[in-house]
Length: 442
Image (cartoon, rainbow, N blue to C red; front, side):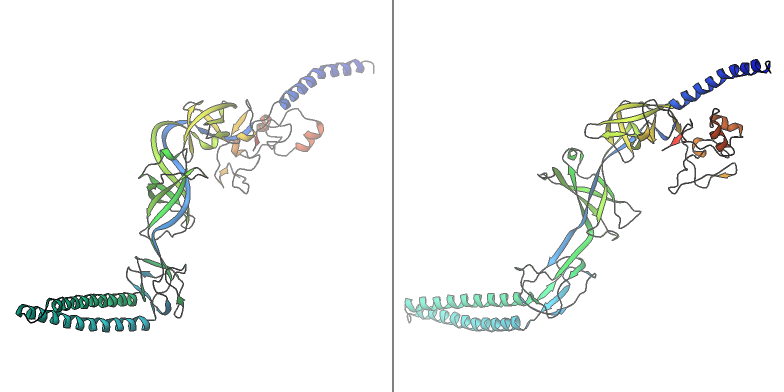
C-alpha cells in the first residue's frame, strides 16, 4: 500500500505539465478573434464610364389643350378618348343657327352696299361729263365724287362684316391643332362651353412620338453636362428595357432653392412603348476613360463623395489591413482610386462591417444552389446564401467532420472539459460556436 502512494504521486506530477500546457493553449486560442468569412474583389486597371445619376418625368414635347373661341352649346362630338387624330380633324361642333343668321344678314348688307356703290359710280361719271359740257357746276361734281367714295367705303365695311360673320361661323367647329391622341375629352353633346377666356377646356391632345425627360443636375456637376450627351434610362412601366435620349437643352439659370439646373433630354418614341407622365431614372454619360484604377463600389466601408475620401480593408494573406483611400469619379459598380491602392490589391467587398484592423479572414467562395459536394447537398438559407457553418463556403469539401473524424482536428479543439466532450461526441462541429477558432459568418 505504501509503495502505491509514491507511484500515484509520481503520476500526478507527470500529468500536471501536460494539463498546464493544454490550458495555456486554450487560453491563447480563446484570446484571438476567430476568422471572419468575407467576400473579396480585385483592384484593377480598366475603362471607366463617367456618368451622373438622374431621375425625372417623361412629358410630351408637343401637346395641346383645346379650348373654344366661341361660347355656346355643343351639339355634336365626333371623337372619343384614346383615338389618334390628324391636324385639322373635326372634333366637335356648336349650335350654328345664330352665326348662320348673322352671316346671312351680313351678306344681304353687302349686296345693298354693292348696289349703292354702283349707283354712286354712275352718278360720278355723269357729273364728270356734264361738267365738261359746262352743264354742271364744280360743286355738283364734288358732291358726286364724295357720294361715290362713301358708297365704296360702305361696301368695304359690308364685306368686312361678312368676313367676321363667316369667321364666327367657322369657330363653331372645333378642330385638332396638332397630330396626336385624344388623352381627354371633357365635353359631351348638350354641354355649354364658354370661350377661351375661361379655364375650361374641351379636349387634351398628346403627341408621344417625341418625349422630353426633364431632370435636375446639382450645380457642382453641371460643368460636365454638354449638349448632345446620351442619357440612358429605365422605367418601371416597361421592365427589362433601357431607353436612350439626348441632352437638348441646359437651363441657363439654376434653381435658387435647390441649387440645381434643369436639363431636358429629347427621347424618340416612334414605337409608342413610353407614355407621358412616367417616372424614369437613369444616367447621363459624361465621358469615358481608359487605364483607370478601379475598385468595386461595394468595397468602400465608408465613402464621402464630396471630400473624395473613403476606407477599405485590404486582404494580405489571411489578415486584413484598414486603409484610407482617395477616390475620383464613380461609375455604376466601380469607383476610381487615385491614391491608397495599387493594381492587384485584394479588397473586402462583403463582411467588412464586422472587421477590425489585423483581423483574420476566411474567403468564402460562391456556391451554386443545389451544388453537390461529395454526395452532400449544400445547405441554403432562405436568401439563397450558404447557411451559417457551411463548409462549402470555406472550401472544405465533403460532409462536415465529426469528433471521430481525423479532419476535425483542425476544427474541434483538442482540449475540452469533460461535459463539452460528452456533448460533442458524434455531432458536427459548427463554425462560430463560442470557444471555437473556426471562421464565423456575417
